[in-house]
Image (cartoon, helix red, strand yellow):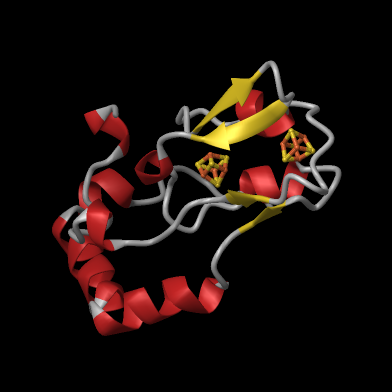
Length: 116
Ligand code: SF4
Ligand code: SF4
């Protein structure tokens, strides 16, 4: 496991968040797109079975569904996004974000002229 990918999510211990992909092996054709497309090394590839394996589920970025969106077989699933929205609500993350924006105005402020 790589600690760089398991940091708390908006202050919530990553181990307390059940967010990771599940692969339906019946649908999967072993193209490997999910394995090579994930920058967080969630998957490894079983070259004998020609199937991806979720080896480091906690590496998965909470709320990311990129691999599911790019899988040509619709073989990857995640919990419903309502799970993420509930986390946001229960942990008051919108208030937290507002406070972080206010405290870091210089960092996040849009600069220069806007193009239309
Ligand atoms: S992208 Fe989909 S079809 Fe391709 S290896 Fe991954 S799960 Fe299987
Ligand atoms: S959802 Fe994103 S971070 Fe998680 S395994 Fe897929 S591509 Fe990687």
